[in-house]
Length: 430
Image (cartoon, rainbow, N blue to C red; front, side, top):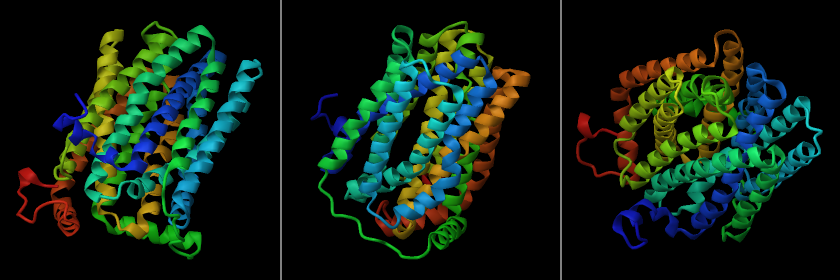
């Protein structure tokens, strides 16, 4: 598509905002490095230990800080300049990757050291993610472009997922995991530059209430909103039961499919291809109407893709099933993000996005640890299959809730001027 193509213009309309355009470019470079590190970390752990359980343990340590810290991070994000929080997070992440690279290249890395570094990165991510999610609103002045910006974020993450694992697999096979971590450390300079180049008005303190009181108020707000509460519950179920397939990917690549680092890179790239396709579709949408159906369809595709992946022993079919899972998860996640960000009260945005981060990232370590334990006993394929079946069951639950959510969502949409005030039928609901 050419830049002057109407379809291209519709898909990329949020890029007309200068700050968001800068962020999109810088973050794209950084995320490619992050995906390289993800592939290298999982392969390094499995190479050193050969243990599915330790894959789960390392995955648990890398994400458990989000479960504990994101409520406090959300309260902080509602108090301070979000851009400064993001800058500090990028510098700390770059330092963490540099230390990991140095230890690995010196052949001194051990599992305990890797766990400590994963805990540090997880703590940084716990503050970075809600700050980044909330900062999108400040980068995109026109709220009608918010859904497009969130979809472009998904395209950015998953475009990097397509590129990063492929590079990571090649680097591991050619020069080892240490250089993967070194490339990641350098890649953070892209997003740091973009944040420093932005022209923004410094955020003012939004509230002086104690942090625990802020968290309690935010939690009560989430509980009182049926659409937000339901979306967070669905995302949490998918994260706990579905996403742990990522930590078992080295086992599937080596033991089930008989491959090596390149096979692992291909499998993770396949997830990214599917997720990127979902991002393109979501970015092409011009209205927030119909998002609940997209969430439901995405949940079904995610669960079905995991079940299919768990049965196959052929690399090509495994890649296809993972692409389906990628389409499903991003459709669910990005659409839930858009719906929540559209209807949330601004004074609670940081805290709600903190709970959203906890639902997506904070719950994954619980699932990763559980998956590692279960996989040691029944094998990786059956563990992934069970997770997919639970995701399918959660889709059935969400389907029974849709009609109850439409009225609440519709009123907010009308108040914000995001849809026309005509009556909404069951076929054209929110």
